[in-house]
Length: 239
Image 1 (cartoon, helix red, strand yellow):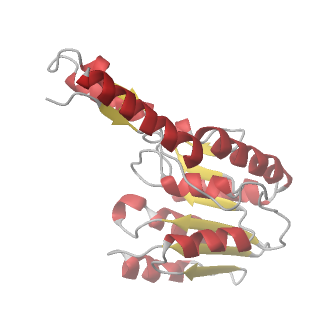
Image 2 (cartoon, one colour):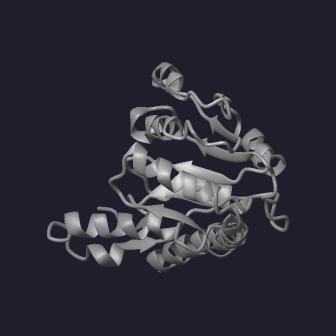
């Protein structure tokens, strides 16, 4: 009975058409893709990646789906690395105790972990503005196109994520690191090690990450497009 349905990713669009095409006549005419976006106070200043400390950041609920255990295990594989590394996580959840217990596997004194708990969105964006984060990491088992990645890119932070859901619609080899769907901690640690020791590439990816957000995930552009599309449809429907 729905007249129109908007998807936030082409992956979602394809999923719906594949699953319900035979059951719902005219389904493709009802489905449209208009992507989400974020608003940032950082529309001109791209994040500077010059810190001696390599700073990893993640932002999600601490639940099994988000696979923070993969990050913990990957960092534990870097016990021989001499570079100073920090991992900052924003978010809380039911698996907090499990993830904290797993930190004992990280024996490298050069690796420091900071769990910031749940913060208001404005506070997180302030941290993105002030801290020089080198890499945003998302290793979830399932995703759409995460708003958290859009926010990170709006501050010129290159992103790393598994190729699940609509991730490939925002991350590519030019603006970040798109990993295989099936990965383990050893694979992730090797990728992190390669990134840490080729940090000069991050400046280019930082610029491209910001440009990806600016062109495709800027709320100042996407939200008016959605509003206009919705209004035009309502007016034509009434006519």
